[in-house]
Image (cartoon, rainbow, N blue to C red; front, side):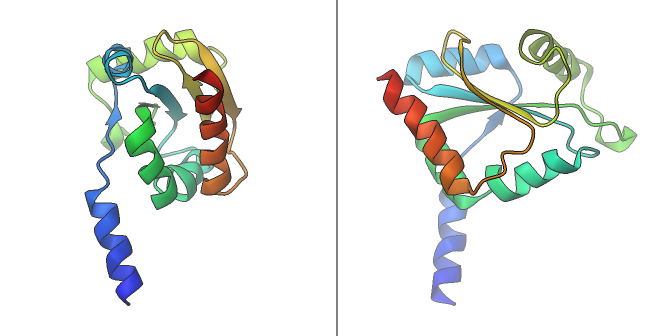
Length: 145
């Protein structure tokens, strides 16, 4: 029970934010010297996207690592009317997809530097543990220093 309460507390203090504007993310990455993780998702229709979000991207291991090492951008493409994004957010997501995901892959996750250069990508569900996913990101970060 104590472990559960500690885990819950840590997850509440982990402050990660998924941005919707890639330009904002590049400015933040330049200031903080962090890499950017872009996640293309169909949050209400893509089973592997939902699974990636729940099993990896919302996992405490990933969130703790991301809070200190990454700027996060989610380009979501929901289909259900109740989940529709603003026109501006849709425009931003479509522009990002035109640049990085012209084939419309879902899920599709990329690690890019502050200039937008792709350093690593995951095409489809990364069939691995959150620990291994984070280790792959760390290996890229350690290789770029």
